[in-house]
Length: 311
Image (cartoon, rainbow, N blue to C red; front, side, top):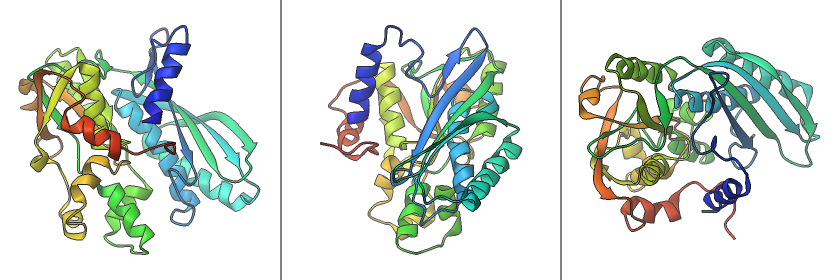
């Protein structure tokens, strides 16, 4: 729980924390969204299981996932690297080839960054900037009782891929790739935004599932103030994960993290307009107030991905 504690300290310390709390900050004066994610060696990646090229793509794509959760059009990134002495020029070239691959794929441009030394481990920090193109306000606070809880794809894939890699198993390949090179759900984000705009829906409660589906359910529920009723049997999990990890797949789906899907809530009439193959219903927002005794909160304390070592 240290991350939440640190975020609370930061919010209370700053004179103005009004732009904090969502996947991206919206800079209204410029009609831009901005976000920043950091990947630390040993926490978010292992150089024994990923190539520099794959790492470059992942570093970009995890930031674009935040822009997808803002319904934004990606424009620019800046790239900052803290490099230990063991990193050579071939690593840098291959890493930036991966960066370039994602830039070409999503129509974005590298607009600068920073290079500095590091004592032992590689740290990557990317800032991504996107444009607001839909007249829809996004936040984690807009869920309402009766809303349908929806996600965009299967969960647990990345956690399963990582587990397979640590066991020197390289199949099924798509599970490995889901861990090494996640893909931001920008297309699904655009489809959703177009439907919301068509039916004049001006607010959307949404975030990505970078720290796990359970984490996203917990945070949207807490921010809205209402309890989320989840149908745990309806969670989208691949058949391969159920086969390979029959006793672990539910925890992988909820708490594995790094699937980078979207989680959002919409009125029933909007959900009925969505493609059910791409947008999966997993529950409803109830009229019960959020409580720290609910199932998700109790599991969150023990199982959510921890960015910091617990004391």
